[in-house]
Image (cartoon, rainbow, N blue to C red; front, side, top):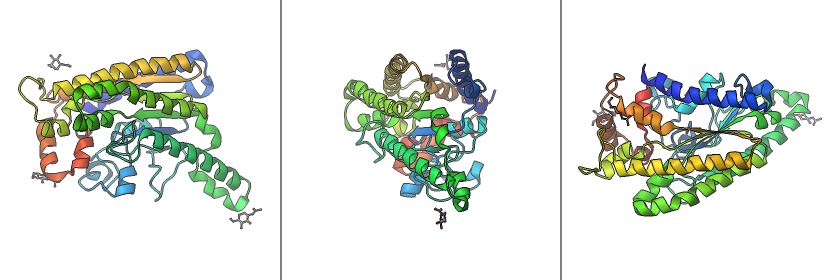
Amino acid sequence: MNCRRLVYVVVWFNLYVACTFIQVSGLDASNFSKCWFPAIYNFGDSNSDTGAVFAAFTGVKPPNGISFFGSLSGRASDGRLIIDFMTEELKLPYLNAYLDSVGSNYRHGANFAVGGSSIRPGGFSPFPLGLQVAQFLLFKFHTNTLFNQFSNNRTEQPFKNSLPRPEDFSKALYTFDIGQNDLAFGLQHTSQEQVIKSIPEILNQFFQAVQQLYNVGARVFWIHNTGPIGCLPYSYIYYEPKKGNIDANGCVKPQNDLAQEFNRQLKDQVFQLRRKFPLAKFTYVDVYTAKYELINNTRNQGGRQVLKVTQNLGKNNVSLFLVINLIIIFLLVN
Ligand SMILES: *[C@@H]1O[C@H](CO)[C@@H](O)[C@H](O)[C@H]1NC(C)=O
Ligand SMILES: *[C@@H]1O[C@H](CO)[C@@H](O)[C@H](O)[C@H]1NC(C)=O
Ligand SMILES: *[C@@H]1O[C@H](CO)[C@@H](O)[C@H](O)[C@H]1NC(C)=O
């Protein structure tokens, strides 16, 4: 089984379960029974940024994008991101970043994720989750208005094609991959203990963001937990792992423990969301395990020496900003 396959299996098994569940509960079964979503709205950081940092800060340089897309693709990755594989599997086009004004088409969704973003404001990026959701609300209002205006005027009809259909918002899949930078920023500026103490407040803000989306009609939520940040090149290079705090794969153990604590509380939060909003469907996706297994099985998968590759990239080719967000999985997936 190659790496790409593994990600597929983990992610799509979960989506399959979610869809089966939706079918059983009878929530608009006609659309969901076939796992059919007309659009995806995504929120997050560089794990799923398909062009926001590129558009806003022109901060993505070659070799990103070269191997798969053949030129800069807007992703801080040479290949596709998990969100790209998800859109492919759902037979939807790749998501355009909300911030990208050139050639974008939002008929089948939009991407509000911005590399470096955290759930709480005041981190590495000026686009925390609350702002991403605010942008979504504006996007929804604005596109609905335009769509109706264009619908009423024959000359303007063709302009409609790049806009989402208003009725699709409540049938869309709402996806999240965010939280990693809350932990990374906290570790950089405070202590491990303080970061642990801050998790409930971080997740409280996550809860509020989801609630805002629910209030305007979002019903199917797909929530990635956070990956093994202790295996990031950033951790490896800048936290100088010492003997005793690194695991067999060379990852910084205390940081991975922190990520797992965050994930435990995130999972509880998802259970609370299910109780509070029984009409919606929430799927918690264990991306941590999928990524860690890829790293742990690099050699079996015919992969490279992950930390060596990323270390070279970190020291020589990639800016600090990108290193913070560079995820080993993207190197492996392609
Ligand atoms: C339809 O749109 C065209 C082009 O924008 C505009 O010139 C025209 O006045 C509009 N017609 C109506 C009835 O609003
Ligand atoms: C990592 O891989 C080794 C050898 O294949 C295996 O024994 C171990 O259980 C794996 N660890 C994790 C956490 O998956
Ligand atoms: C990245 O840095 C390494 C080591 O300096 C170098 O060999 C490699 O060619 C660089 N890669 C790119 C794409 O610039």
